Amino acid sequence: KIVITEIMQNPAAVLDTNGEWFEVYNPSTEAVNLKDWVIKDDDSDTHSISSDVWIAPGGYKVLCRNSDSDSNGGVACDYKYTGALSNSADEIILMEGAIEIDAVRYDDGATFPDPTGASMALKSPSLDNSGGSNWCTSKTPFGDGDLGTPGVANDCPTPTSTTMTTMSTTSTTTTSTTLPIPQEEIPEFPTTAIPVILAVGGCLLMQRFKSN
Image (cartoon, rainbow, N blue to C red; front, side, top):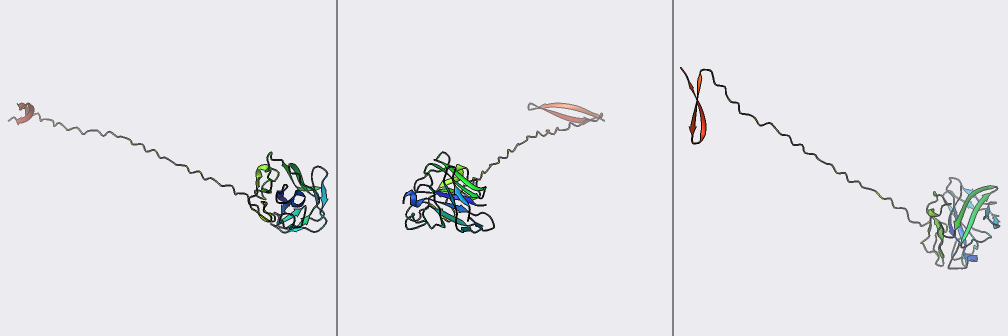
């Protein structure tokens, strides 16, 4: 319903208290209002969203620890929350009542990216955001110089598909056919013919004389 797609847990351009934020995306075909949803972690941090935060279909919203773009690193924020994101391992959990809508549990670089001065970005909103391998480190500068894409599509490289070309070798087998050598038919002499064999120059000649 709503997907957490980008996390700035350790900014460099400004202090963490000013520059932490995360981004959510609406993959559905209907607008979603985050009012009364709860942002929490697995420990004691919790914040109830107190005002309307409408996310259009296919749209992004950025929720920030500090909503002032002059002091938060240049991020245009849609909502200010209370709480902090750990620079090592932490969780962002979105709850609608008792239902967990989405959760990301990053792990201090064990499987997730662990950048400083850049956000962690989900490679595609369609991927499972609980898997660290589905995230990348943002490369696009914004605001005061940190890297990220708050409020727009992420800049993770698109996986390159490799086309395997198979070379098919056709083996041609040549069949040698031995044709029979035609045998010269030796004529049959008539019973009335008298064979005479002559030797001429080392060759044998056969001549027939017909008897009377």
